[in-house]
Amino acid sequence: MWAPCLGPLVERFRVIRVELPGHDGSVTAPRATPCTLGDLADRVLAVLDQAGVGRAHVAGVSIGAMTALWLAARHPARVGRIAALCTTAHPDPERYRSRAAAVRDRGVAAVADVPRALWITPALAERDPALPAALEAMQAGVDPEGYAQCCDALATTDLRPELARVAAPALVVAGADDPAAPPDQLREIADGIAGARLVLLDHAAHLAPVERPGAVARLLLDHLAAPGTPAAGDVTRRAVLGDAHVDAAAAATTGFTAAFQDFITRYAWGEVWPRPGLGRRERSIATLAVLVTLGAEHELALHVRGALRNGLTPDEIGEVLLHTALYAGLPRANRAFAIAREVLAEMPD
Image 1 (tube, helix red, strand yellow):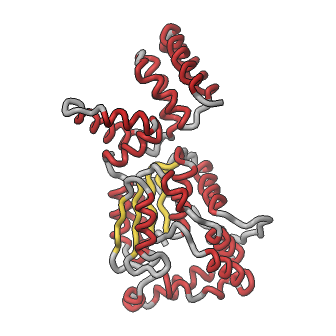
Image 2 (cartoon, helix red, strand yellow; image 1 turned 180 degrees about the vertical axis):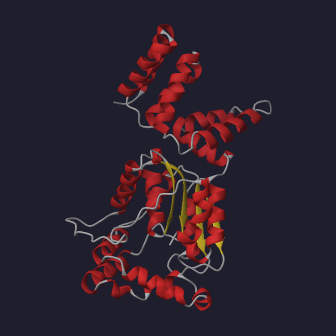
Image 3 (spheres, one colour; image 1 turned 90 degrees about the horizontal axis):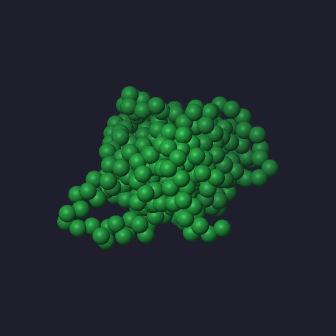
């Protein structure tokens, strides 16, 4: 489904496509327990690990978009920006339980009407009569158990409690003519994510990359390659430094300091910290090392707390400070250990 809009994307990014279970021509083995969205997210992480990618922008359509949202909420250090297209935060459980049972009983022929009914608009089917048959053939090649496992995952998915945890800059795209995920369901997702951008794409049903490939490619390029914005930077800054610090900094902003606050929020937190090349853990390690070297004590305690939020353990922070002592000197590291010890003493056990 991504092939029609890949050309401009591969010119700008390294693109890795992850197939759903049974959708890559393979046979999917039955599971002892039902597949969940978390299992699909783990599948994506395994592919990224195999490719040597620590942090990536993640885009998805339908169940792929749900997986992107889950990753951003549950594995924020692995996600740069996200794009969620033609999806919902809460699929109908009974619909997908019934669909899973039907496919296990009768094969994917049980859902043969889905591509023509939901995936593209009648106008596109009329303009390109061969396309519906091609989409039907693509679906017919899916392994029934793999398809059913995806339905199992959809039947137990409710992302509404997760949306507020998404700190990644988010693009949310609705197909104006999508009967499977109507625009109000995409609006619900965008409203639940701080700073999310919602785009309504005219003349598009459920497979927007197939129906409007040029428009989707432009939206993704603009979003994934966007420079930092204050809104996006504020989300990242809060995720690392905490609401209390950011609220205090905002309250203390004056006409004299406003331009500087905008600068650090836009560029440090909106552009550099979210870059996909390093995760937040790695950026915290680098930040601690530099602050120790500079003797920037007023920032060090703040970033020790940030490192803990980004997943470093106290022992790992100690290793960073010990290693920094080799190159920044013992007096700097000695003071850094004292500051870190004070911060760690504040933390609950």
